Length: 145
Image 1 (tube, rainbow, N blue to C red):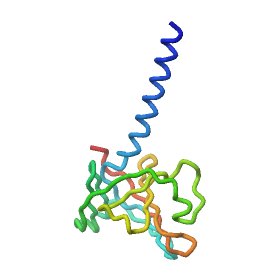
Image 2 (image 1 turned 90 degrees about the horizontal axis):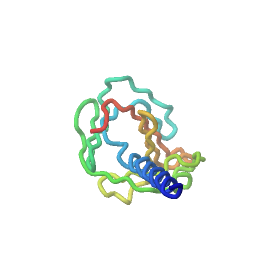
Image 3 (image 1 turned 180 degrees about the vertical axis):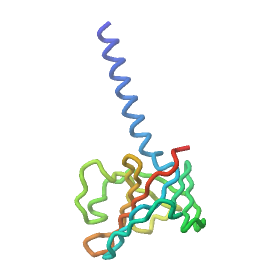
Image 4 (image 1 turned 90 degrees about the vertical axis):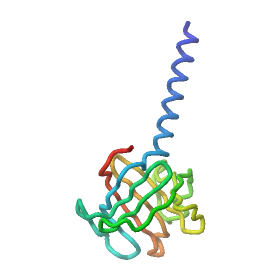
């Protein structure tokens, strides 16, 4: 009887872990509006609500809006990638920015790492020590579909 209980608990914990891991691969799905952008040596620019600069993610597609106008559509892929510190030149806490987003199967561009925490989506790319890094932060404005 105890063996059955322990097996059930282990299976339950294992399935919970899979759900958590699976949610990170689809957590970008939804509508996100730009809130902060820091690129190169330019100080952080804050954007107010309703600015119209958005990313909209579906299962494998995305749309990019600038000032409310659709400017780009395409596909994206999320992949596990633990090279964020080497790629962007920053010390990143363990477990953060472990996924990379690849837009339109473009493997030649610098890596872009993605982190979703609460209702914020942060994209890191470039190399910060040479003033070439960028950190773009979006706020979720519409829940996942």
